[in-house]
Image (cartoon, rainbow, N blue to C red; front, side, top):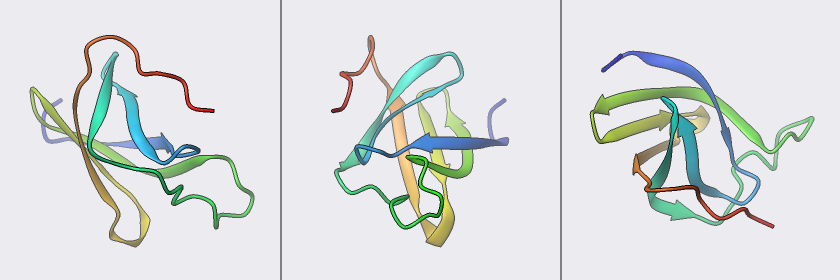
Amino acid sequence: MLGTPYPYDLYTHCGIQDAYFENHWWQADSPAQDDPSKGSNPYTGYLAGTMTLISPTAARFAGPHALVATFHPLDGTPEACS
């Protein structure tokens, strides 16, 4: 639902690149290579936060330490990270 924050674990093993939310893939507007979850113990490769659909074509992840990432729909499936 538009404007409702949902608990969301963002996969960050390869940085902030993409997310699967609302039954499709989204791509980060400003991809980042750094993994913000690396300092967590235990390390899982995921960062807990919330994902909010802010418009039909934009979603926003809010995480710890004021981390915010905006995503737009991705046509297809993202490339797997290594």
